[in-house]
Amino acid sequence: MTSNDIAVLANPRAGRGRHRGLLPGVVDRLASSGRAVRMLSAATAEEAEKACHRAVAEGIGALVAVGGDGTLHRAMQAVAGTQVGFGVVPAGTGNDFAAGTGVPGDPLKAAEAIAAAVREGRATPIDLARVTTAQGDVRWFGAVLAAGFDAIVNERANRMRWPRGPRRYDLAIALELTRLRPRRYSLILDGADRSFTGVIVAIGNCRSYGGGMLICPDADPSDGLLDVVIAGPLGRGAIARLKPRLRRGTHVTDPAVTSYRAREIKITSQDIIAYADGERIAPLDLVVSCVPGALRLLR
Image 1 (cartoon, rainbow, N blue to C red):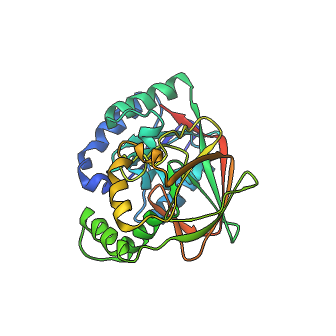
Image 2: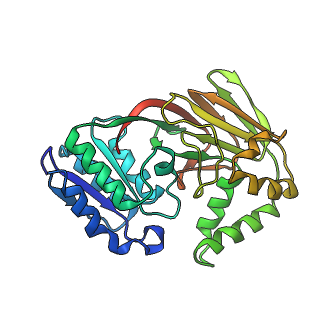
């Protein structure tokens, strides 16, 4: 690869395969930038992430991810904090990072916008969140990190082999609701102790997760801050009543819900594995920091 090439990571299974025939059109539009377009080959998510790191190390001009938030999350690890431009072609079921950063929702229009940005030599600086684990490992995320009930549900769903598709997640919610209990969290925001007992913790660089649930409705990925939304010790009925309000972002007016903004969040609790951009991150304890302009978004 040369420094002018556009490397493309595509997940053909994203969006349950409904965009499978999309890739040739995306590549054609990216090629209208005047740059060579090269596909990255990978059989697993781990291989995909390594392929992106190799491409950046080889000096590519831009990296484009075609897929959902999980695909973007893998590719993002290679370009975060670098000068390599990053393009997003939303083709997943959620596409929360794309929605939160003003990327066109239509995949072909998104590819055209990327090509225009490359031709004109422009990129938009976007904040990212950097997660440091208790072992010192670093991961980046673009949308939202969950460390409460939703993270527990994700962990349960990932252990299940049946049913397939979204019904598995619905079943995981039902199973975990029967075991719902408040947990004690140590929460330090920019040095201030905001520790609490509750069931929901979300740290948002963007507004939504889970395909449009506005968990952090006021989050802005260009303000240098992360939004933190927590909920106290809600019961099963209260959780069920709160869930429809997540689509509209009106849950933050509930007396049990509190919102903060911070540059650095230190969070600790027992038996919680955090998820970000829908991907498994690490068990708490975690330090989450906003890094302004860590991503050069092509849009």
